[in-house]
Length: 261
Length: 309
View 1 (cartoon, rainbow over the protein chains, first blue to last red):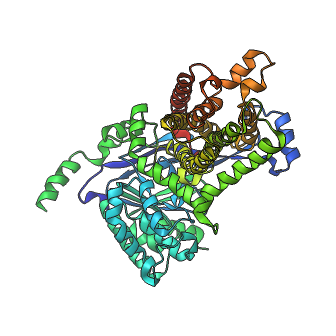
View 2 (cartoon, chains in turn brown, cyan; view 1 turned 180 degrees about the vertical axis):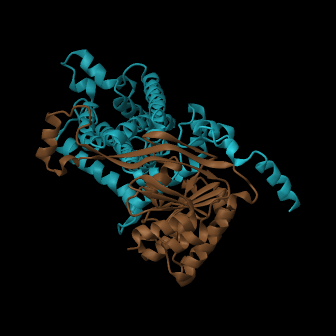
View 3 (tube, rainbow over the protein chains, first blue to last red; view 1 turned 90 degrees about the vertical axis):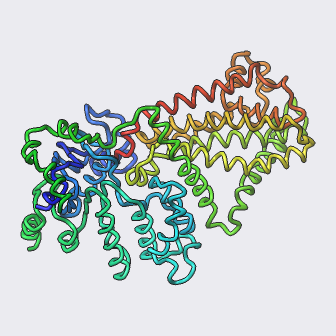
């Protein structure tokens, strides 16, 4: 086993019977009309909140992750992978159950903090600050981030607003900003699927670097080759339940048998 | 290998099964793991927030710049918007309706413009506060930071917007015969108190709005009522002279009216202390401290729940 190598069994993330429920407003009965909303308000619901639909996204998932592991999360669309990652990161409150972590896990995702109306330059600074980097750190790494993204290879694009970028360019800059910080527990959600081939090779390299620095890595991907290359343990989620937890080959084989046909 | 055997021997000496029987919480305890996403204590929270001050400032400035970045005139709108706003109010209330009862034209125009700008500061902070969590769920669900950063950042954005408006306001004041004196410096503490008050209110609205996004629809009506009741375009004591005294008192001591009066008193020559209610600075300070502190604590109490869909 991989974790026998040096660091033994030091847990970094413990999920204990985690349940996550989303609440969606205004979808009860599929009627979105004003009269339907009004009638809902008039006959006040018993017990359940009116007009709120619950989506039970993760149902009772438990596992323990150890230092030095790279764990892949697989499952069909909507099986709760990204939701589970957010709960581990402490970004999404659990309905019941608890997640214990070593330090502050971080999600490799800075997209939401960036503003398309601002220049790439300002977005690098804003994104860095949003991830909790200090101004000095950002100043130090600024050139690396820009160089890594390759935005300036075709002219001085970094001083233009991000809305003028092609979707590939924007994705590259976002990844470069997100990957600029080192993390203890790192979670990557399909981040590898951005940019052209040249950039993908470069970003896979960077992910491997980040893995070396991080204690534990979680990776959500639909690309089984990526999972096989980077992970030594795989969790298979289906309909919010943990279907299988084990070595990469074993779980991937079962998963491919189930979905391959 | 020499160091790994030493290390490995230590780690392996309790066989993996030693942890087997432990419950999740005991295991977490043993290795010093903490609950992910738990709410920090109030003072730890303030420290975290202070650590993010650069983000708060950068975010507010980014929002401010992004606002007009598509317009051809660009950042010129920062000044043009309040100027046009002041013109509209001057046209309706100054020329057509003539609500300047008890005031000369030289006092009324700066009085009106000050009222509009100062009230807009509170109004926009509240409106942005309501949406600060519910409108930024993507951000809340992607990154870690004390959530209070968002409402405070939006209030800060409005403060910067107000500073642009002050350029217009100073021009209007000078144009109507109020020249810079030492008393103009009183604008700084007055707006400081108002900023504290606005931030507290934005924090309260942010928590309410995160649970009930419908508030964003309701707020414009509440804010408009508040605006008309605060004497933005008329003098409360003059207009309500024949009504029972307590009505005028309630309106005059409401925070929006207090902050407007403080700025007017500082800027306008003909607007002396006889127009202000008693203990006006103490009341302004009390409002900002009470709402600021209460709002902060109220917001912090739900810190771990923001981001739930």
